[in-house]
Length: 467
Ligand code: C2O
Image 1 (cartoon, helix red, strand yellow):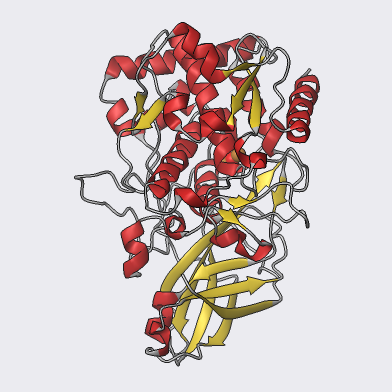
Image 2 (cartoon, rainbow, N blue to C red; image 1 turned 90 degrees about the horizontal axis):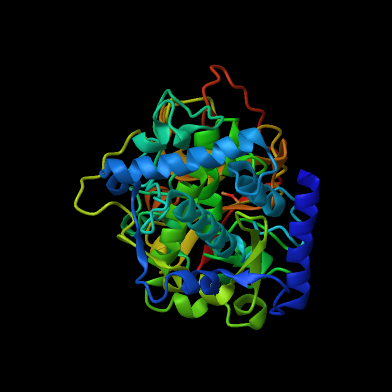
């Protein structure tokens, strides 16, 4: 039964990829379907869960609707009105081979597809709850390094998922949320990926520097994580799942916090777009702007969400309560020091940084590039550190980034053999010195003694790029 749904949805999607903008028979556009019910209503405000949960009745209506969907799935896993069928739409587009044309990760569909998916889920809950003002509350993990109470409370339908979130130490680290307090420029941004200047990656090598990823299809069938898809997207999945639902694309969307995590990424897309010049770099070609995605509605009918709606959240019927990275007017409470509990590095390599501190100030940014990286064997979140070679072993230096290997149907998914980390600030500190690069694994979930094999790679080097 699942395989039936799987095939039909994937087939519909492939057809729409092939035919571009051709409308599918019997498919109603999300915008149109809703306009006929609520004409001309103002967009609703999507809230930080911290605000959303202040209204106990609002939270109770949300919980009751999710519970109703979960109960429907418990009674009949194939019930199109159920939570599982909704979650499986993610499996059908995300738990595919990286090279599968229907795969919406690792390319320019990443932000767009998840935006549409959150909207469809949000509309379902709005309909089931009868709360016409409902919007799916997001989790601002830059401000709240712990899973928010509303998504964590024992017995809540919103916490009804398989989770082994790391409990000791408890919170997401700076590296996992893409926050670089040591770097004056990146610190201002709050999430490193927001520094990307361009939405679309034009070459394979640009994917990690881009905000939105590379075209799909593209000539070499290149794929890889865009800037925020790498971090914080992947590490947050691993942090919550710890080997459970969220750490595997096949099961991730069963966890109600999935939509809160992606809601925050979606919000950060709006944050990025608000910077002058950024939005203009979003692809203007029909292959992007005229595309549409197909989902399944509560009655089982396909529902189409066109890019023309996706590229304007007000057409999807929402705006965000704030677009600052950190929650405004609140002091930032960093949950953790950067390296949680000093697991032994899985790799260390000495690298001489050939630059004087002055040379580092030529306006370019410097990156540590690790090429030929083989897929790790286990679920893995690794933070990358630079330290002076003569510093004592207990010194872990500066954390320059984090990357994560998540699973996809039980197997590690590793979209690219190249990892890149901005080390501009570290170069200013260490320029001209012998430096050691440490790859330090973070604990995944609550397992007490995880062992991580060294990462296999070909080469580490420092590259320089104009911003
Ligand atoms: Cu489609 Cu965060 O995964």
